Length: 128
Image 1 (cartoon, rainbow, N blue to C red):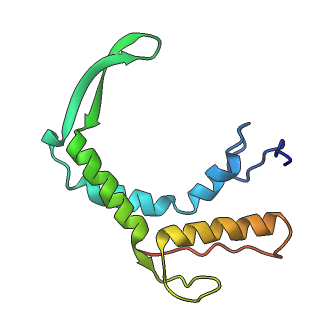
Image 2: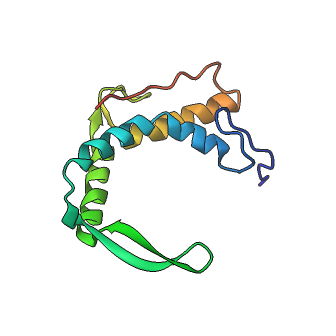
């Protein structure tokens, strides 16, 4: 199996293997941003804990984290976001699909476009 040695990106041009992944992620960033902005309103001061530990080259510092319960609840809610049905039909089946499936399909369609198996790729975006 041949490894990809050249990397490329359209929006992100730093020298990392994940450039194209970072570009692809931007297509769906609005969904996570909206989710987190909406979720922020549910947080209370008591949902956070302050931890003193080592940060940056062995210097002591304080970090604020979500408490374990709230972090777990946030992860569950985020999973629920990806399991929501969207109005974008599946490529082969034409049925509604989950957000997670849509993102996977778009990654496959982009790969086919890059390999020259498709003439164009126009991303399908969901509204939730």
